[in-house]
Length: 279
Image (tube, rainbow, N blue to C red; front, side):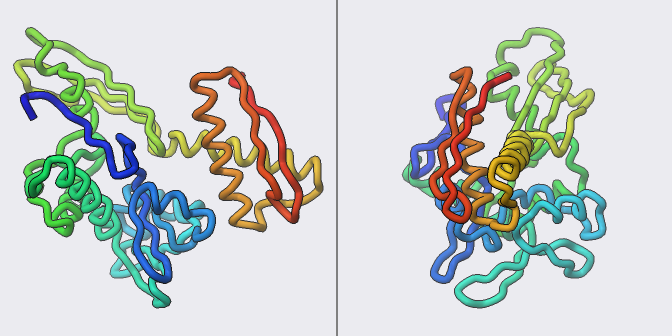
């Protein structure tokens, strides 16, 4: 709007929305509300659909990811689908359908802010996505009722958001460093006269904020085992509470050198108090 990028906050006032979809006995939740109840409902709360979209069930990466998902992924026509319990019934959803639910939420967020209907959208994907993954993402947009004008690379979108296409005169090389929730991508772009060309991409599709959380969770599971001779991993709810505390502590360390974790009655009535430093 007015020739500049505007980031719209969601109904919780947050400028980012977690790509979580939860199914309960009574309703479907999307975004913050889905993520907030994951400890109580781990088997029916779906996230990371982006890791499944446009891939085959037999893909080595899909098989590796499935080991870490608390929700069930099964094979249907050679593709991965998610199996959950919704309103007391067993349901299956494709990654495209899950992604479309998140996109629908984004559409509604934009519509309530802009006060009108949103039909057209440009959807971003990682630069390393292949044609199958790009097409599946486009399909997710169509299911959400969007006319997907174009699929563009995330580093290109970042460059546009920072106005680099306007600031550049002549040819410029730009390095985009993107450490996200589940992936770490570095892209080298060339920008000339508003044209973006991805020259090279590198990174790790399994390194992001969630991996930092995993490391912290494993560390504190071992600490709990050492102190109390009990194995937290047998209790999904305790693990989820620990993960939430770890994520909060990680965020605190962005602005403080040290923080503490205090979780009452974490496992079998045992309170868990510990501290964490940056280094």
